[in-house]
Image (tube, rainbow, N blue to C red; front, top):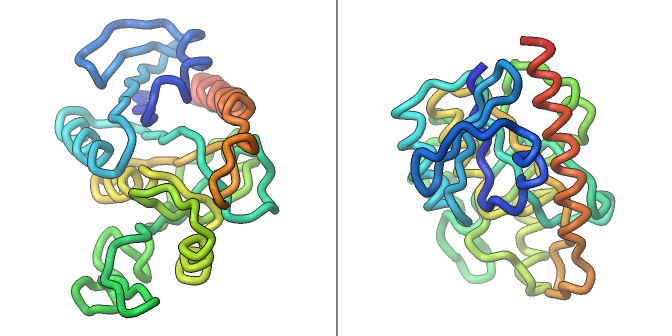
Length: 230
């Protein structure tokens, strides 16, 4: 298999990469590894939707992949998710994409500017229905994601996001990754580990070290399973 592993930063997946066979560096963003018989291209586009969408579009135009995986950390909107828990994000939306109407936010679909079922959307959401079964991912809890340009730390905006989007976790890249993969018909997964709760900003309550540790444990299980099954 040829796999594309996408992470906003090297720090989020470094524990996995140090155990893989490094083959080379194509540019500042793309690195080549081998996981036994599988080739793994590692794309580090940077933080945010714009960088993620640009570099994924460019890469999908240059190379065909059997599977793409977006891996990183995330904030949780609900305390039913525990710090350090790794989740499988199967739905995505973009929190700021629309128009303000007083205290409300109207989506582009509600404004009539986009068809909510136009490819790759389903009912106004990006839904991942990847057919490749990976047991290491199947055991994870499935959640809904919201992708934002600004990590929310204001209680009023947090409550608005919760009520409007029914999201479980927040990231800054997820929707761009899923849109790119669905549009390019690349089987994909987005897995993230909870590093903090989306609340008034208090970094003393974050645990990035635990989140990264648990994320990379799952990623290693995924690569090992793909070696055995393919």
